[in-house]
Image (cartoon, rainbow, N blue to C red; front, side, top):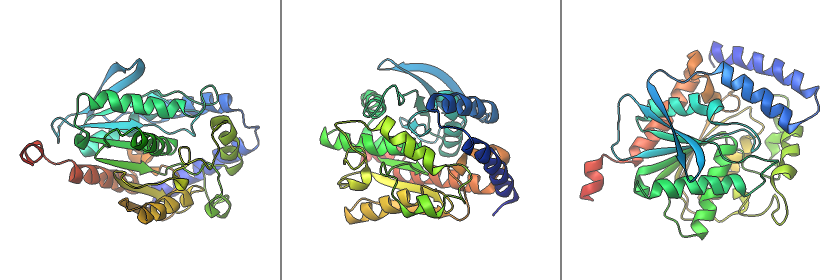
Length: 309
């Protein structure tokens, strides 16, 4: 493990100890974390950003200096525990995905809990996808998300399958937050090792995000209880010290049972969504982002290949 990783984990553990002393106020945490992320992380200089609106949703399109795939688009779904995060907090990470893949990405502000519980955020993801589907063939669309963004992608795909909407070519999930029951063994095993996720906090999020008639075990809210057949190829990254480690492991196992291709890569000793730390020249972040770019480019062929097939 790199020196950068050890330093960043040390800083994160210090901030976590301070947060553990506080009561969990979703709106207060949202303001604090949004401010922290917006001030800490910067968008790579190799991309350009333009504001747009899609189906009435505030969005941006991030474009690379060098375009690797013509007529292709990424949809980036930001994380934040289903209750925080925005274009501003995740523009830098989406920008690094664009940098590595050479494909433009759309990032957007979906509705957040507790003001907007499930399925509001999921439905916003579907709105963005179906709008872009009018301009791009499904085989030239990939979806990428971190943490709760990964969960929203899975929730959206399951609903889209029921709606018989054509699926994107592939998905990439970074440290996805999937299990609404929070019963994975890693929630307790890694409770002290994880420098970022606090188990009691994520358990507090669930009843504010999942409300009747839905439950944490419902197949539409929890992909670990769903039929994963006919879903697109997936790349899943997770760190071995994460509280949410078993979310990824259990997704991979269920995907195998349903014939869904899911490539799970576990990074030893890495924290939640370590991809963020690319700007600090963290080698594990650079390697993971390169894997994502390669996974997408392997599945979205050159335009000439698509046309002739």
